[in-house]
Image 1 (cartoon, rainbow, N blue to C red):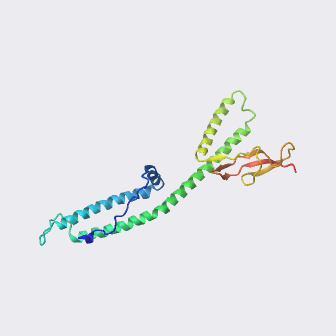
Image 2: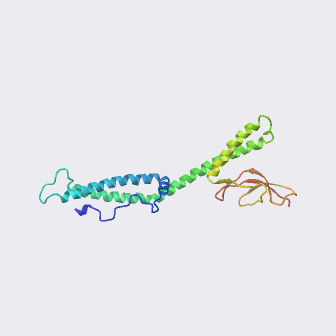
Length: 225
């Protein structure tokens, strides 16, 4: 009856983490939850089929030669079908595991696209706050306005903290030397008291993430020549 059993080493349903770190296992599941859950469920089915097959093999060995097997035992044909089903399940499991890199890449790309879309919308909200601050800068310290501005600034600062959480920082401009790699000049003014190319004003804020510009700041620079 060995023909019904696999000669190969049983397929590793869930690859073990050599370091034994549960944190990494949770991270892998978080980045690829559907494949991990599918492999887990298919592994349960496979384990149950192997137990049934083992019981069949033991039961066959215990039947005396020439006697009729009890009705509760699986017949030889059913045993062959079970073996074929197990082999087919092995192939499916290997195919599913082979899909993991593609699914993980798709997951990461989708996550990145969604994050970038959210960031772009948040930057537009930042622009709206800046327009409010610029348009009402002259009245912000008037009686009755200071408290209102304090609340608005608190909301704005919380929004900035959200951006910081995702590694997004404002590109510093005023007083810095203009750098075409990270700045976009939208105007120039003469100012003999300042060196050529110094940034005087920011028309629109710019941001970078992990050293890579997400949006160039639009700036006014000194041009005396």
